[in-house]
Each structure stands twice: as structure tokens, then as C-alpha cells.
Image (tube, rainbow, N blue to C red):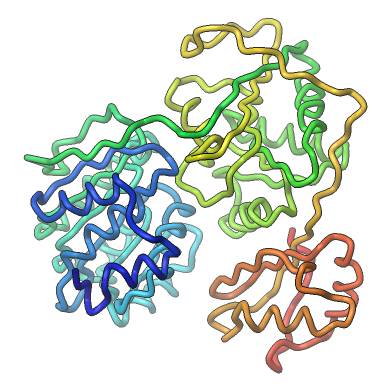
Length: 438
């Protein structure tokens, strides 16, 4: 199979894959025969690669935006963009989302991309301002389509559809099996690809029960059981609860990161980076973190507030015990809480060792005020930090470089020494702001 002079095998090699999985193969094969595909597969199963490979096989060499991929959150847009970049395709890819500079995005359209990824609101904004010509869009993908409906983007998606008269092939991807497809999608005669909604991993569900006024202390008791190197997401139903948890953990000097819709995009991205690189073992989050973001396998999912719906509970737990991993889901209940209807029996009690206390993470994250647009690469940052005699390769952790900034994980035992050494140092003859990531 030739894809714009790039073979399927080369793309898979760039992704680090040996082959597509069963669901991805089924989607790709279906795309050869059917214009409309409904892709149903659980979180972590590889839906992104499945729909990208399917639309790539349909791309021609004509100019203009040919593939439009719409996702409900900024983080999911960035994740899809990241997968596309790893593929090293010979076509231009743009990403558009709220919290990102509109003028910068507009400038990027001076040469229209072949593939455009964005959130519903920002894509509609570009279309209405005629930043790009939507007439050229032939192929449309809605990722996490059910989540877009749940987040209230139906009106924006309906408006977008009115500007896409030539989008005759569509893929709707969802991690929920039962979804209603609005008529405005014009999704007739679709073919369904459905993956098994079960995990190969082992998920244990446990609980602790506390007095209502001691719920925060109960959470702290659970977090104190984490060994160094283990991690956990703490789910709350509302931002206000995240704030209360944050204040309590601050009082007890627990290192954590937060992730919810009330934060600025830069802060959300920094939180995910710190969680990925291990400089924050704990992520306090609302359900926007339940799926569609790039985070590592988890040891614990902690339900500080019980999910109101079974699907939400399932997606939260889907962050752990994914694929061949195992994990533990812990419910923090007060004595007045009823067992939610989606649980058949009382979970076992999670044992607390009162003598244990969570340690500081092994890593610390440094913020670098330059990025790809400043011609700064991972290689440059590795060389910069290893120039010091006291630094060794294993003192450097995960490095993530974005357009205008970068984050570098430094071993905590070296961090103070590194911070002092890098002050007023230049990277590639450029003066660079370097500080501890907030």
C-alpha cells in the first residue's frame, strides 16, 4: 500500500509498531469498502492509529485541507497531532484549539495543511472567518464523538457540517458502545467496527469508608500508601473539589499536579508533562482526564467522588489495567454514601498502613523558555544538561519539546545543583529562561 510515497511499513516503523492490531486492521480494511465507518473501541485500544491509517489511504495530491479531524478536548487534539508527526508523513499537519494563539494558527494556514486537527469551537471559528476553504475537505473524522456530544458541542458540529458539502467519507470513533448519531452528520449506510470492550489487564476495585468530615484525611491516607515510582489519578466530579484536595495536599507538602477545564492550556499541558515524567506521582483531575489524553499506565485510580454514571466510572478505571497492565481502583466513601447501582457488591477494604508516608518524587521538572520554533531540539537539551561534570545520562528523564518551550525531568538529588549551574548559560548561543516548572 502506497500512502503519498510513504509505505504502510515505513509509517509503522516510525511509530515503533511491528504491525497493526486486529481492530486497526479491521478499520483499515473497512475503509476500502465503506464511506462511513462507526469505530467502537475502548480507551487505550489504538483508535487514533486506526482512523488515521484509514484516511491516509484516501488522500490524493490535490491542494487544500483534505482531512478534517475533530476532537472534544485540546489534549486529545495535541495527542492526535503527536501521532501524525511520529508518522513522518510528507504532508502538512495543523492543529487548532482554544487557548492557542488564533493569529499564529491563521498564519499557519498561509500554506493550507492536508490534515487539520481541532476542537469544534476553534474549527468553526476558522471556517466562519474564512481562514481556510472548507470546500476542499473530503474526509471527516470525529474522535471521541460521544464525548463531544456530552460536552455540549452538538451545535458547533452541526454548524461545521453545513460548511462541508464534499465530506463524503466519515469516521465516527467512540469509546462508548451506545451512542445516538444526530441526523445532521448524514451518516447513512455506515459500517460498524467494534472492538471487545474488555481489558487484558487485572483491575481490583477496593474502598475505604470514612466520616464525611474526614474525607480529605482518608484520601491522604490512601496516597501515603504509594511507593516511590508509583502513580495515581484522583478523580473528582467538580473543579471546586479539585481545589479543596489541592489545598489539603499543599498543607501536607504532597507533590501533585492538577488537571481540569478551569486551568489555562499551558498549565494543563505542564501538569500532564509532570505526571508523565514522574515529577508528580499524583494527578488531581475532573473527568476530562478519563480518556483522550496521553498519560502513562497507572497503579491507582482513586474515586474521591463517585462517578454518577457507569460509563464515567468505566472510563476512569480505563486509565489503569489497560492492555496487559494491572491496577487498583479505590473508592473513597463516607458512611452515608450508598453503593452506586453500577456495582453489584461491596468492594473489599483497601488496607491502610498508618506508618507509611508518600515520599517526594524522584524527578523534578525544569521549564525551558525555548522550543522547536527556536531551533531547539531534544538533542540540544541533552547536550546542554550533560555538559556539567556532575551530571550523568541517568540523571536526565523525559524531555518534551513544544513549539515555544520545553520541559526536562532532572533527578531530584541533582536538581538544586543543576538549577544553580544553568543560570545565565546559553543554549545554541541563545539566552534562555530556565526555571522550575510551576
